[in-house]
Length: 352
Image (cartoon, rainbow, N blue to C red; front, side, top):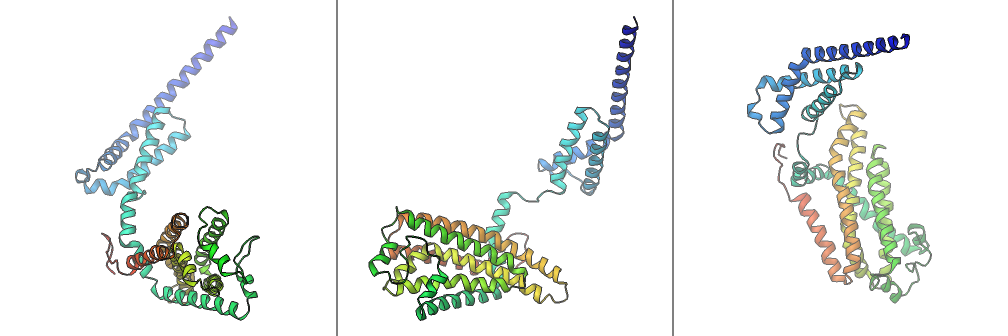
């Protein structure tokens, strides 16, 4: 009997606790349900695009209601209210968050704005640095050529030579020509081209990332990287294959080198902003320049991906110098037109 009595008492205690929890949950909901329902109605209308049916008062109240309901959710979690109330509040808070703090445009509208003028306008905004970067890259190419012409040993210092690589000083005309044509199925060319792409992609990212050092590393990297271009052009020129080498490189190199040019200019822009901040602090100037060049670098990544695709497809499908030049310089023309002649201003943006 004593055991039965204790069980009965424990059961009664559990029932009383459950009843108290239910009463507490009901009271909690009754006190706050008005704000929940109002927020849910506003959120539902906005999700359905019925913005005209939302009053100005509701729009102004939306952030306040969101914070109120978020507070209710926090209390509900701490007091272990019923699962249905918790699930309802979590869903409502999540839906409201996207309206209060979430992105204001869809992915497709962002892409349309980005490619519809935002990217090209961002590149044009750093045109002084683009000119400087172009001069540095041209100088690097000339330096690489001249150094190798003066002493062929410089070639080995500039170009990484893998075992079995035939591209080196002293190689005959036929050997060098064989590295440019008829090698679509050979792994050696694939490895060389993939390594070149990986190297150039790394240079592009580093040129931008190291711009905070007052632009000095991008200056040096732009010169150093294009000395390799000068060295390889010198090598093929020595055997009368300059145009063929240019064609082989241009099919993807025009896009790839343009990406390096732009990323280097972006790094120089950050460095110049920090070196000459004007009335702002150095950190403020760097932050503002970083925001301007973020759009530029988003496009640079895309250019590097396109360059990789051109290299892969072009190497396998195109084995003629004229066709390579057409593709390579056709892409260069496309980028020049897009960046410097395409002047469309996206809706909602200020004109240049």
